[in-house]
Image 1 (cartoon, rainbow, N blue to C red):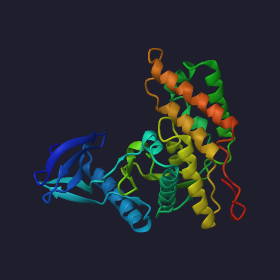
Image 2 (tube, one colour; image 1 turned 45 degrees about the vertical axis):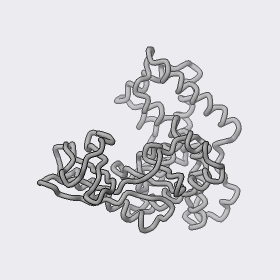
Image 3 (tube, rainbow, N blue to C red; image 1 turned 135 degrees about the vertical axis):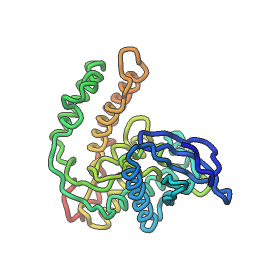
Image 4 (cartoon, helix red, strand yellow; image 1 turned 180 degrees about the horizontal axis):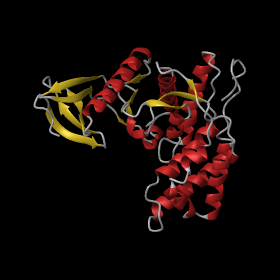
Length: 312
């Protein structure tokens, strides 16, 4: 899809199943991001865009800790497009974080925890979720490839993952509350501008009601931002909940166990010839076992005695 003539095309930022995204300049020379529909059902696509605009507009009013793209729908020559402000910043990778002073890293984690608190308390409120076995959701009969990947791993790693699955089925911290979740909180969608020291969150296209642990599991997946940062975000989130007497406390170990299952599910090329993916996951599990024995995933509950509800 060509960029509308009103805007000067710069480059394509990405293409997905439902949308293609271009960087362009508007009539005033400002950078903008233009999203085009790739779906046959353009009405559904437009409704999804309007939902995204509503969420980011609401967050911009209530959450000063992060930046969000300001978006609008335009119709040019019969085509609906979504035009968003261009967000300045660099992808928040683990390397970018480690270059910053520890105090700055803590501030970013606090800002992200604050963002998640406000997102999770948007107009789609917390709802009770029917209890379910997470292993049945992830490792059911329809997911044969996952089982094949598991079988390609060393025996000790298989045992570790099977223990995670067993623990998850008996985990009382998961499957209790649904909230409005970003659902794609990966490093690509977190931008940090060093000059302004401001964190930005982008791409709310997958935002919908989901388990409260989902966003935290994305943060603690392998290859993302590092477990220490994820734990700092969780602690910041828990502190805000404590201050507001919500009774909600995210368990870091539960978030990590879900991250492990998500990471295994996301490895699409794990096979006998792809040793790099296999080796990466083995190292990931070794690090998990090491950190688990040191108590790294123990939730900081030292100041949670004022909670009105039970720990989730």
